[in-house]
Length: 127
Image (tube, rainbow, N blue to C red):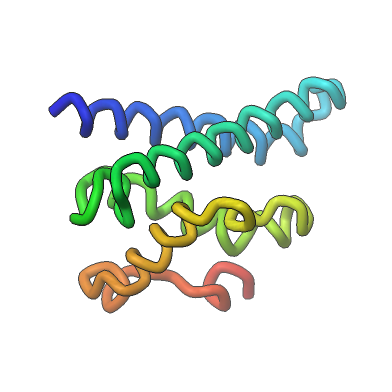
């Protein structure tokens, strides 16, 4: 399915951009400009995901039904939701201004196979 393949590719790009930004803060060989470029790439990838969820009709990545793409994305998005404001500063909250991503989290949090079995919570990610 081309839509699924494109969504998986986007998830891979988001993961790469996100972890590239997160680990750039520890990389003493990068200049401030290079670190800022990684942050910008990450923010742009988050914005692209928010837009793609909206274009799909949401609340899940490919529309109204949970798919494998959601399962791929949830481990890193869940972690980033809780940990980035603590580890990277308050300006790295991934949700403000991204209503479709917020709706995705709301849908994930109400999706029983996820929320009742494997979902983390703020305490688990921040304690």
